Length: 88
Image (cartoon, rainbow, N blue to C red):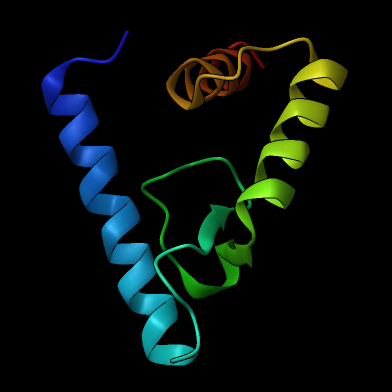
């Protein structure tokens, strides 16, 4: 479960990503999902962001989670990635 601070940081980052993509493509709406390709919600570099429909985004994450055997929670996935990285 996320702490209020973690939730507010991720929410701020998602809003920032959405605004950034909106400046590059004014046709993006609030319904569009800005996906972070590297799974890091704090990495808002343009080459890490991709516009997806909500349906496509959910399917993508469900498939990834099944293949990797990881949680659907983004923070838990990030923690796993960091743990794996630190163990190498």
